[in-house]
Image 1 (cartoon, rainbow, N blue to C red):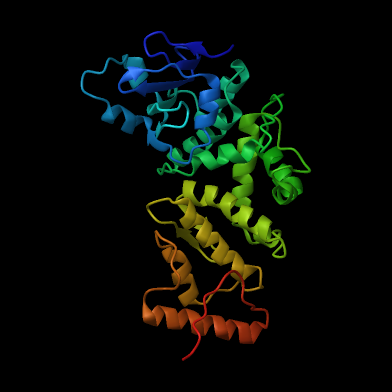
Image 2 (cartoon, rainbow, N blue to C red):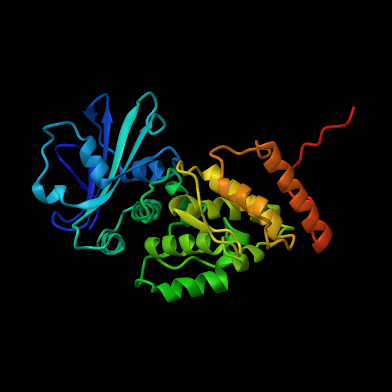
Length: 336
């Protein structure tokens, strides 16, 4: 089936009334605006989508909004965006709603939509997978659209149709055998993602998780700065959609309450700068610094004693291990 036009809202809808549903609605100064499938595909490339859980969405609806009891019991996520780039001179408020009955798992609901609907933009299924993954962790990030951009290449050659659902073991095997090669050769990869938008989204998210592991981080070649930066961007998906990430061989460390892509990327790149030089056992001062994960990118720890402790620990590590070398960009003041 293809998208249907919803008469009252002029929006687009996919799915069945009593099953998984996806719709895209737009308002121009409060008046319904007829979106196209191409418009929806363009919206998925925006990093300004703000996400809500289904419960939060229902709480924010104006009093008296007509909703069926069955619809109220649904689960899902809602993306909101104000954009003026789809049509010249027109400011649109856009809402993307993904909902499903509570007895259907979110991943199964996404697969059902992909299997039964022909023209849902693959990138939309990708960002929805990131959003439902984050929702189950209790944190909906603005970084979800990044998953959509990663699963659709720069030439807009959409993914091959899904033949079947991949198992967890198959996804893990693809990451182990092809993940780093795919990342190094992106946006025109030497190896394809698993066929199907949901399969591909799962593979990209699993690769993002793998990059936080020492084995995954060690697979990223430091002599390829482009690959390192892409790895940091991709690692931010897992870092910002999950409450905790593992810092090397140490215990789990939570990220900041405001899940910003820059914050998660910063943490991964700082960690990578150490691990890629062979430093895998962090002194307590370094562990504390990495775990703090400020909401904005710092040039240095703000606490003087902490900064001195980090500096001394790094110097000691470099002297003992003999593998430390400067990495990344630095600003060094010239002594007077």
